[in-house]
Image (cartoon, rainbow, N blue to C red; front, side):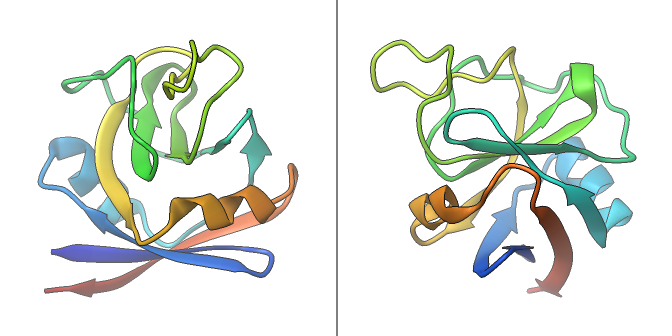
Length: 125
């Protein structure tokens, strides 16, 4: 299992990547550092990885890591977005799920728009 550390301000979470082509491409691009944007309870930022849709999902779960093909963006979901219906978590358009936050993803609510997000590889188990 490949693990990554995601840091923004005082917030730090660990996530595990799945076994998809998207996860492989993002793992190879690490470490990453970018200015994070908030969109409801989602943090996203552009990364230097260009991929097509891979089993893309229109509705995701809290803690999912998604890659958004139209914006070449790394997305972290931890609650509803402006286009969610009810309590669902809906990206702007379908995303490739490539991993999940280990533990409680709602700690990411403390991350402000415009904070620098750093993503680093932790381990391959």
